[in-house]
Image (cartoon, rainbow, N blue to C red):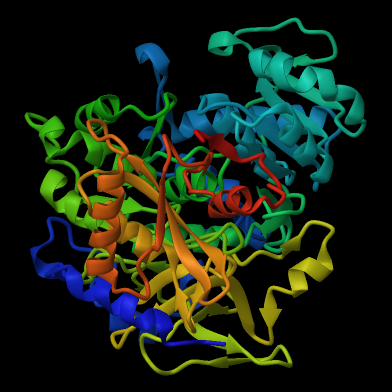
Length: 603
C-alpha cells in the first residue's frame, strides 16, 4: 500500500535545499533538450530510431554498426573515438577507422573459431583497450557480449560463466591464473579462453589462445550480417539479496535508448570529450562507457586506474573533459578532501557533471556547485531498464536530492498494489509507493536468462514494477525513498533509509551512513543507523548523542534513528552501494546471502 508516512521526511529534504534554477539560454552550449515539456509532447520512438543509420540495405539494427562502422565510413573516420590512459601514464588513441579494423579482426577471429550468432562471449579484464574491442567485435559477429567485473573472486566469476553458458572468455594471463584456471573443469561449455598478455603482448598458457596471434591472423575486413533488432546482444548480471545472480537480457534495439539518452540525459554533442568512470563489468560501464558515447560520435576517454581524487582531477584537466559521468561514492570521497583540493586546476572545459549508481545526497549536488561551479545531475535507472529513465536534465531546474523527471518517451508513475496483485496509479503528490514504468522503451530487458517466471513477476499489466519506492512531487520530480525491502515501517509510518542517511551525512563528523529497520515490540521497527566517521573524529558516547540529536532535529522524532553504532567502514558492493541488507542480516543474525559483489567490509 502507498502511504503518506514518508511524505513528511521527503518534504523536509525538498524544503531544506535551494532549488538550482537553470536558464537554457545562458548555458555555454545550446542543450539538445532545451524545452522539457515540448520534447515530451513531441517525442516519438520512430524518430529516435531515425537518428541512427541501421545496417546498409535495411538489414536490421546492430549496436556495433551504430557505435563504430557508421562513423568509420564518414567524416569522423580519422577523429579520436577512444582515448585510453593506462596505469603509469601509457596511452593509446583509436580513431573510428582504427576501431573498425580492430573490432573487425575480433569478429573474424570468433568466426574462425566456429562461433556463430548467439554464442556467449565473456570478458574479464580491467579497463584495457582489448576489452572494448572484444565487446564491440562480438556484437558485430552477432554473438552475445557479457562483461564481468575483474575484481570478482573465482566463485562469482565461475557462477556467472556457468549461468551465462560462456563459450569464449577474453581475459588477461594474470586474471586467468588467479581466478579461472582452477575452475576450468566445471566449465565444460567454455571452449576458448583468449589471453591478453601484459601490455597486449603474447602468452603461452596451456589450453588458451593468444590474443595477439589471433588478431594478427584475422582480416580487418568484416561485413556485419543482417541483425534483427530483437536479437540478443548483451547479458548483464545482478545479484539477488538471497538467491543466485540474475542474467538480464538486452537486445540490439537497446542502442536506440543508449543513443537518445546520451543526447538528452547527458547532453552529448559531437565535439565533446566524455568520461564515464564506471567499469564495463557493470551496466553503466557498458551502456554509457562504451555504447552511448560512440554512437553519439564523441571522444570517449577510458582510464584504467581506479579512483584517486588527485589523479582524477589531473585527467579532467589534462584531457579537457567536457561531460563527466561518475558515481556518488566517488563524489563523497572527493568531498572528504574538500573543494580546496581543486585549487589551481583549469577545469574550464567541464560543462556537465552527472551521477548514477545510488541516490545522490543533496549536499553532494550542492558541493558540485562549490567545487566545480555546477551541480552534479543525478539520474536513475537499473540494469533491467538498460538505460537512463529519470534524470536531472542540463536545461532543467535541479532540486537537490531528487532523481529528476522522466525522460521523453518514458512514462513513470507511483503505484500501489492491491490484494489481487493489480496496481493502481497514485495521483496525489508526495505519497510513497512503488515506482513503475510503462513498458515499451527500446532497452527494456527482454528477460532473465532461463527464468521466465521470475521475469514475469516484474510486470503488472502494462507496468514494469521496479522494486524501488519513490514519491512524485507537484512538478513531476521523483524522489527516491528506498528499495521496497529496505523501507522501514515504524509506528505506522514508512521511512526511507536514504533520507535518514542523507541527514546524518550533513553532520561534519560523518563520512557515510547506512540505515536499517530493527524489530521493536511497540513500534514494529525502529530506525538504526551505522555510521563511519571522517578522519579526525573518534567514536564516543557524546558524539553518538550529538548525532541522535542532529537527526531528530533534522528529521523529526518519528523518522530519526533511535540507535547509532559506529563502524570503521560500511559493507559496499563493488559498484559502490551500501549493502543495507548485509547490515540488517548481521544485526539480526540472519543469513548473509550472496556476497559476490561485496567490495569493502570493515566490521
